[in-house]
Length: 219
Ligand SMILES: C[S@@+](CC[C@H](N)C(=O)[O-])C[C@H]1O[C@@H](n2cnc3c(N)ncnc32)[C@H](O)[C@@H]1O
Image 1 (cartoon, helix red, strand yellow):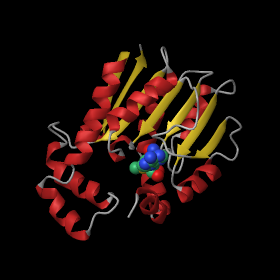
Image 2 (cartoon, protein in one colour; image 1 turned 90 degrees about the vertical axis):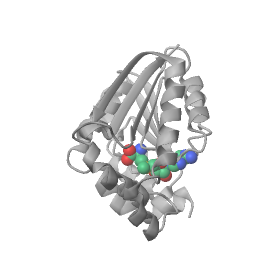
Image 3 (cartoon, helix red, strand yellow; image 1 turned 60 degrees about the horizontal axis):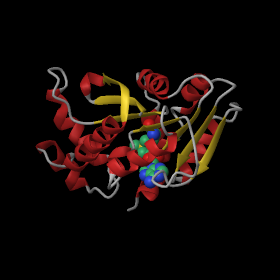
């Protein structure tokens, strides 16, 4: 099953998870890390638009927000969410070939782990914003924190359950290791690519270290 078919099928459930209590704090932090007042900010892989109200508030009436995603049913929910927000538009497109020529900032949350060549995608996003622009990436990985480490098996099962193409057997085997390997490699590649292109970097963690937010300003 492809990414768009998978997320399209689970749109309603995904939206509940994306807006679960406690997640708002991460989303506000991501909007603040990515954009400034007056910016044009693009959210790549915006899903049901859970970040869009925070981005709209952050850039204000002088700025604009563009939400990009490939999955139609998720974007239907995103459009409902932003119907009253004049500074937000939604585009169905592939985030690996951005449908815009320029922007001040890019945000990608929980999306880099889905890209085969996440480093190349982040590199392109840095080119899109150009020198002085900001790129922010928020992703989940297993954690080495004292509080989080005992929960890593649960995290691995969650990753398996949420991965396009995984089987019930994958979910059952996932706690014993391995399944989150590709996700971790892609997230690490995306962070390394961002670090190579940016200064003024900030890194914050949430959820006992399972969620990391890295942002930087392109040189
Ligand atoms: C785990 S969801 C995250 C959604 C949203 N960023 C959030 O934080 O709730 C991953 C999203 O990436 C989208 N996606 C995956 N590959 C994509 C691509 N190549 N171009 C655009 N969107 C993509 C999926 O459709 C899905 O909405």
